[in-house]
Length: 199
Image 1 (spheres, rainbow, N blue to C red):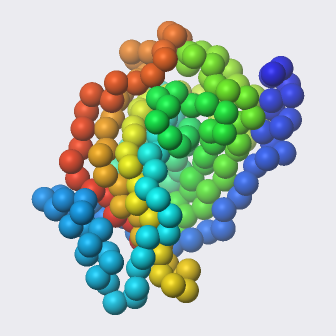
Image 2: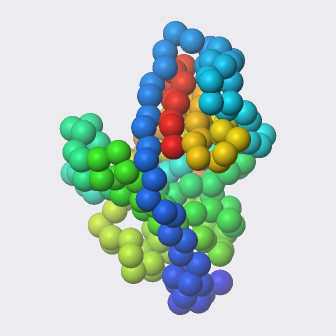
C-alpha cells in the first residue's frame, strides 16, 4: 500500500477513548492465580469479561528518554507513545494500533490509530509509516518492546474494570535493531510480578 494512502486511512480511523480514572499497582510475591482469586472475592462482584489474551507493545520516546523520566518522576501531566498488537506474533501485523496516552493526575485519555497495512520487517520501514501520521512527533524512536498476558474483570454494572497482567517480558530494542531486519523479539528479561490496574 502506498504511503500516501496509508496516511489517509490511518487519519480517518483515529479512535478517541473517553477520559477515565486509572490506578495501577505492582503485586509481588503472589501468584497470578492468587491475585485473580482475590479480585473475584471483592464485594463488588468482579467477574471475567472475556478470555485472556497476549498484549505486545513497542514503546517510543525521545532520544533523551523524556517520557520515561516523566513517568519515573510521577509528573501529573505526562504522555506515552506505543505501538500495540494482540496475539502470539512477535512483530506487528495488520490490525496493530499506534496509541497516544495522556495522563492528568489519575485521569487518562487515549487516541488510537489503526494501521491498515502490515508492518514491514524492519524498524526503518516501520518508522517511515508511523511518521506519515501528522499527530505523531517525528523525533520519536523505538525504545522498548514488551509482552504479557492480560486477564479482564468487570463489575455487573460495567462501572469498573480490573486488569491483571502476568508473564511480563521485556527487550530493549533501539540500539540493537534500528534499521535491521527483524522477524521477532526474544524478550530475554522476565518480570515475575503482576500488574493490577483499576479503571
